[in-house]
Amino acid sequence: MGANSKLKDPFIDALFEALMLLENEEEYYRFFEDLMTIGEMKSFAQRLEVAKMLDRNETYLKIAEVTGASTATISRVKKCLYYGADGYRLVLNRLQEKKDRELSS
Image (cartoon, rainbow, N blue to C red; front, top):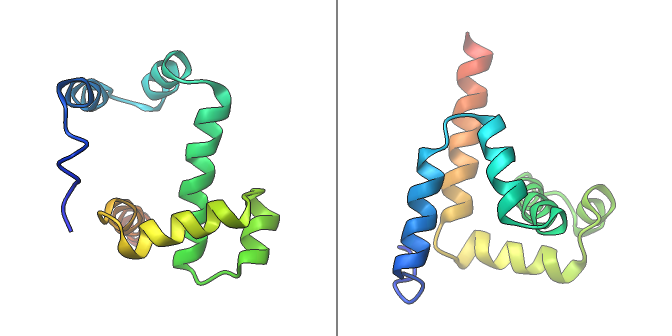
């Protein structure tokens, strides 16, 4: 499934263009600290960790214990992971490929 064309607009395009210009972790931290609240950043990070744990078939109980996510958040991430635009899947696959490369080095 592709990206939702209803979301596409010039402001979002400009945001994505800006993100692609960031070169390292420090630059990401600096930009995201200015762009969003600490709570928003932690929420996004939490959702990614939930997706990783769902991908490993962890239980909702364990995911909630480890991440602090509500069952509603876990369900929402699961729905996106399995029925969304495959954004989580793309990132999870690339993270696994990176891990595999590092282990074989």
